[in-house]
Image (cartoon, rainbow, N blue to C red; front, side):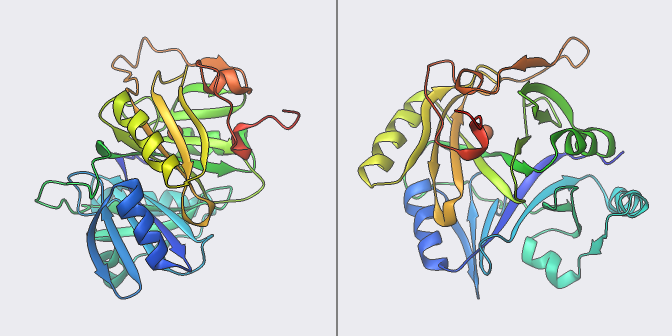
Length: 288
Ligand SMILES: [Fe+2]
């Protein structure tokens, strides 16, 4: 069993690094941690970086998860190879680009690029966003899935994810007490489906809704409230069509033994108890 400690970072290619940096800094509210040739690194919390845009193919996405030690990394590589996944052992140069001690890369069954990393760097300095978006940290990712049952089995049987709830057949998966750190959504493609940052309060969500709408950022869902995690949310579109989410008040599951996963409908009310309707392909029913 691969034990994921936390989601650490996302890496995304873009053909417009300057535009992506503008969005991440001035609109999303992240802090520029570092610029290297062909890449920009952003902070959202105490970590050295949680998002990296690099010059490249905009469909080239990777999600990094922390594991506890190099011996756990070696065990993970062996078990993934035994299951038929091609495992890339990160070189020291590639690890330095990710600000981690060591990492491996592989594709999940849908083809999402996943990296497992040891000792991701903390910054040592307090994060302060460029604008006051109220961000408290990078928190979860939605991943595309071409076969939800197969991918749920991968994340729960090969990794340590547990199903907190399902919306239709889409599982919201936790790896610690936070209601979900990975969510799988039905798609005919691979890649990151959305990127979540937590914000302090519902006021931050409303303020960002106005701030972003006044700057013609495309709103795709909300403000609303998830009946699953109880979080209040706002989803909007960033560079290269990527969906970003702010949310506040995500539930924590303190008692593993008492929690029973719940089933929610694969329709707007399964995603929002306030009646907002998503303009996000992976959140919509085919006949919606
Ligand atoms: Fe989310």
